[in-house]
Length: 274
Image (cartoon, rainbow, N blue to C red):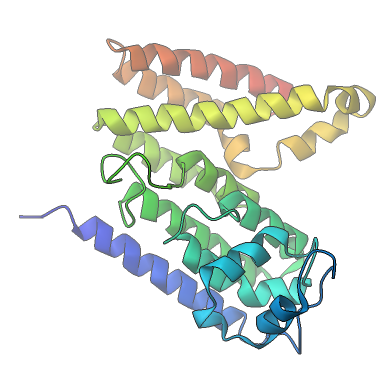
């Protein structure tokens, strides 16, 4: 007999292993001295502290501050590589951090992730896949009904999925696993619908926001569909997946929500030229 906690502990173990590999990968990237930054934005004491502190024990407040503003107001690409394992490690325990998963994924791209060796990019992708499974398998108390109080900070599945898509994770297995689990779990079906509605909404807003640029340069649309999660959802496979989940809940208002979502994704597919 299984208690149901096996998946939780497996997800946590996989997460810790992925973070350990990221620490190992960046072991040679320690800053040579103070982490330089805008003297109007950051104190010299914080710059000195960031350059001297042991990253494995760096406090959450400092990592959150650095993660949110890295390469904007302080720190270099090398500095961010050094601290990103600790930032992600803390995010799993402090989901209210300003430097959430999408911010961290964006900073990784700023730090030249696309030019890193393929083996290093794969280490990064594995971390975001493991972060997703912390949510899906309950490795942290973020997902209803495990989240103890509504007032607690939590990570929304759309945030983790979009971050994973930003670092080029293969979106198919993540979303297929999400959909398969939702079929037998009505509350998770609600989470599935909410997450995909938010992702579709953000993509629709981007298309509206950049409408003028798209009119002048149609090729610009490729950048809007650069996220692998968005690309999967705005594809035949993504639309069909949502339609399948909708048909499973056909006698429920959730089925209607998902049917309408599938229509939105079909229109998004046309707009992005997927």
